[in-house]
Image (cartoon, rainbow, N blue to C red; front, side):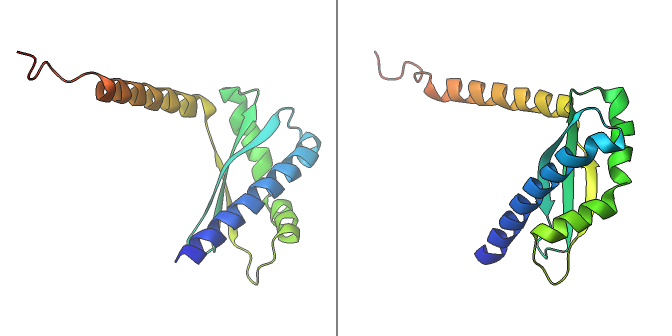
Length: 132
């Protein structure tokens, strides 16, 4: 079981690096004038499916869908490029997903605030029990 998780993590890491390199080399040729960021890569437990979450910097929500569509048209080229980096008998299906960094940052801020409140609550001295 641990071996399978290790294989998933290793494949995700290789795919993330290779996809980032591929997008950095070719995005400008497809009319994308922003840096393509590979935010996360998820690999299914059976290694048959890969989700690649991407965003763009600078982030402009109104332009993101157009840029994402341009990436989607290159999925065949992406699969071939990934195939050169990964040695598997059956290469997984690749799906691109658009990540919204604005939502991600808001979620991270909320989680950080919750952690601070929780940490502050845990470290506060107990009520004056036994101080009489």
